[in-house]
Amino acid sequence: MRKCISLLLVFLPFSLFAIEKKDVENWINNTRSEEGLNPLVFEDSLTQSAEKYIVELSAKRFLSHRDEEGGGPLDRYKASGGSALAVGEILGTCEVKAPKEELFEAWWNSPSHREQILDPRWNCMGIALWENGEVLIGVVEFSSSLLSSYSLDDVEGAYLFSFKPISESPLVFTEPLGGGGWTWTREVGDSRYYFEGDFPLLIELKAEEGRGGNRFLFMQPPPGEKD
Image 1 (cartoon, rainbow, N blue to C red):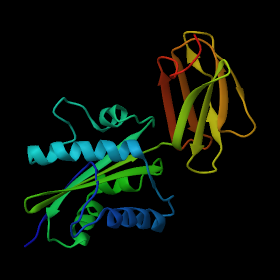
Image 2 (image 1 turned 30 degrees about the horizontal axis):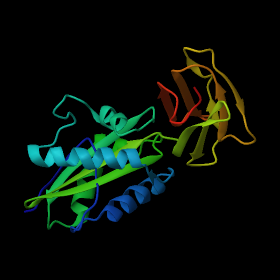
Image 3 (image 1 turned 45 degrees about the horizontal axis):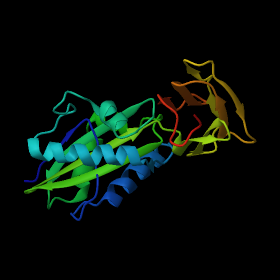
Image 4 (image 1 turned 45 degrees about the vertical axis):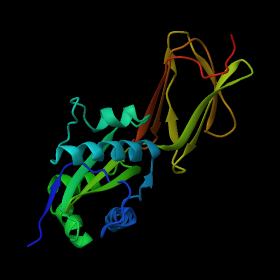
């Protein structure tokens, strides 16, 4: 009798097994769609965090939300360059030859996992899969990130913060904080802002309707800025 075990945490990287990364992506987004929720897109920081952590889980041979240094999902996500204000994750194991539906059913039948999968705050996900002998480990991470990319550049004596929103939902841009009395102006549209001041610089973006958000803390100027 095949058995699937699930634990709250979700990281699923690449795979060539009975369960593929695309299978997980489709199942999660189809499940959310059936409940009237937005589909999720991939975020590089989530994927990197998932792929790194699944290697550690394979070596330990048991599932845990805490890594060897005592860090949790949010700690690992930030270490991978993530900026979202909220992060969630689910973990699961199954026999390598088990049909993919068994792992999905194990997640769905767990109230804590189902809550994570259907959390309306999420906009992004990262997936990792790893084969450890006859066992397949799955990790899926979620985040409330509103952006698919961003950058801070030195432009003619000011600092240009530009970003690409995941959706067309209005964003709320909070006042910049830092040690140097920052001032800022917005270019036409909502995705390019010019800042002037002294570092550090804290920038926060939130969704107008309250779903999702990002926080950026820049401790020093970007490469190539003025003297």
